[in-house]
Image (cartoon, rainbow, N blue to C red; front, side, top):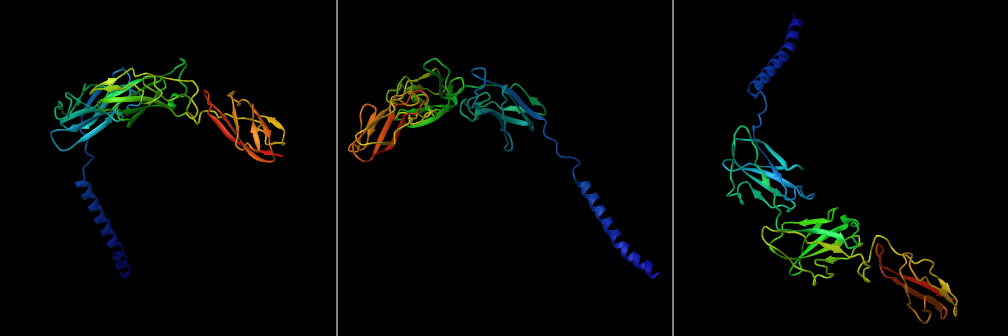
Length: 329
């Protein structure tokens, strides 16, 4: 009998605990929602058309919907490559729909008006409102084409950028050159601008619109509000740059077999051209030890002297210069 009481004493508390836990769980399940709240069924869809029929490759267009008659709500969706967009999951209400573009290539538009205050609100119910379309327009900007002056295809267009300056010479926006040579910059304020092309690979010379090598001689391009000024085309010159204009290029030049010693009273020949075929100019830094005459170095007296060699740049090659040490015995 005592053993039976002991067993009951041990078992009953656990039975009660299980029963209590089961009751709490059942209560929680009873008061919890049977499923997550369903997403509203309203939505807005439409299409964005582009000025040239094709979206600019650098554009990042979005369409947004903002609630205008209730609690704050704002949702943005990207515009697909085909120009279509869809904003699902909207509650019933009125929305202001706007098109914008993060790279400032296209201007901001509000459906039905130029501003959000005057925009036509779109009333959404339990279904999707379609055909909320936009015709994208370029923002204030400048566009054109960069070409090779020889008529050949552009060399490494990804290394080219188009820069802009205001009338005071302040540097403003810069735009990359596309593979086909086209460029476009938006988001400019109304005004007059100088336009130039820079080449980070130094294959081409710096060129300003219209055919000027300097900013002072550049033709000013006037941009008005709501205007995209086109056909600001620039041809890049392939002729060798003057000394100092290009310190680096795609390929360095070299001068080989420079003598390192010569006897006093004797001479040794110097290379007349670089390995790229450009004429080399030689000059001695210590004329009392050695002298240079007609691509030859002459030993004057025992000692060390330095020779300086210089060659102009040419297409695809950097300007060359070097210092060589020569010992006269």
